Length: 126
Image 1 (cartoon, rainbow, N blue to C red):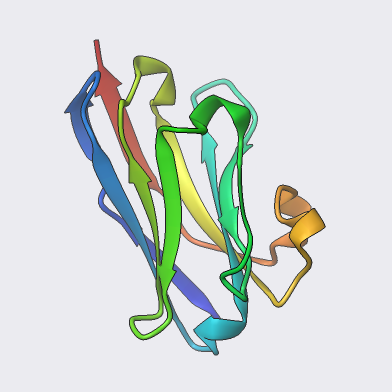
Image 2: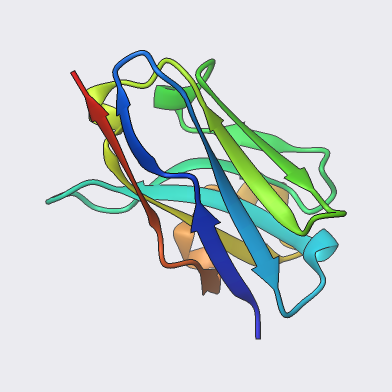
């Protein structure tokens, strides 16, 4: 049973930075495609970024391109989301998700991820 635990959320001023972590346990992390999604109050969950299990592919939502960077450390069984130039509209609960292997074309789709963490709150003040 794969378990994912997010950390690193918090309150930050607009223009600031945060790094989210997603620690995985209970499986073989190097085989996981990892995704980050977010959900703001009253809105649907939306895709943020993903990194393929091979490490060769990453993809981002248009609204975070140039500001967020996804990465992974297979030695630590952890995925990261480095967030810079944060805006108040980035305020949301951020979730990480995993899919075993998976294809690059599917990385944006929440339905492709069977395993999810509990989320970490990110609040950006103006």
